[in-house]
Length: 178
Image (cartoon, rainbow, N blue to C red):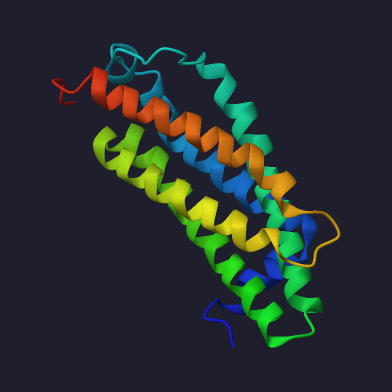
């Protein structure tokens, strides 16, 4: 029996809900904290080299959220079709990691932009990146019609870049509090 509530499986079973959930949560998070990203606090910080224009983030995250959501759908399909207890357990663990990383992902924007805690946000994104890498490895071996790795590799790469950016903002603005 999974420690996840059944609703988490039901959401992932429906491909539209599986894709829509992370996109919707990401949009809500962005709307709530979007004003801070345009505020004096953020715009006067020294950015790290390679910091993209702010217009890049919305489209990139929308695609990544959709890809991760579809990977969750493939994972629950593997859970439902597993014929061994090991296959069921592996898919269940992968889905637990999925929802854990989704929660960590949704915390980053309010930590960085809302609370203006770039150091705590860096700890969060490091935990997020580790969780996503573990999730990607766990999902890779599942019996799915398409390898979930293709859906998650762009997310892993972007998280590496986002971690660099967060660390760069911490380092280049270390003497600046809020």
